[in-house]
Length: 285
Image: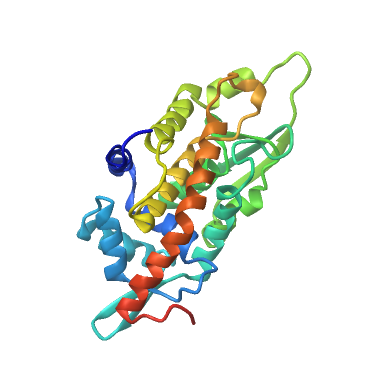
């Protein structure tokens, strides 16, 4: 087993690839959603992300951007600024939690395939980006221009629900599809997804976390683990086992996440309660 410093270095090694928004969403989903936490001071969030290699200015800019997108509620008391969840962010985090904590997060739900095609006016490029991001999170890959495919029976309405206010001008259709005997979907899988890149995502996750046994900084490491897990879930579309090699690493990744989350989460919640108590912010509404 590696020495504790080795584990510390492995966790630190992933800093460059963790986006501030992903770190904040991981923190909010694990430690604020459905917890007795009304709001979190900006100083606590800036300090936490600072431990993960994010500069103060980048964290402040991300907090402002998430507030403008109604993903955070900004509360000012004198010179103190704190942030809480909004109905929109609660919906996003609850939708994500189902997969974050799923027993088989890399297995398709149902059989067959789900197809989606959509068109967005050129003037609404931001809406196009958000639809693509939502489809990617739901497991879709781009099969060819304008046609997206995902394994299993994806609930497209739920996947796009966080975008309800942005879909008025989006023309979108969704279909179920099944393979016809003699016509394998293997070619479609190779066209829509790069399996070597998906495997590499798993191997990077395992390289960072597989040998970690404990943590002297559970709040920091729970946040980093959650962000890395969200990134891995986004990268892996939940393909059927028949399209994957026998040594596909997703089972090892899932076991590693469950083990470490169980070890980190209680101490991370205690750490956060201590920080909120010392800041004078109420921990419950």
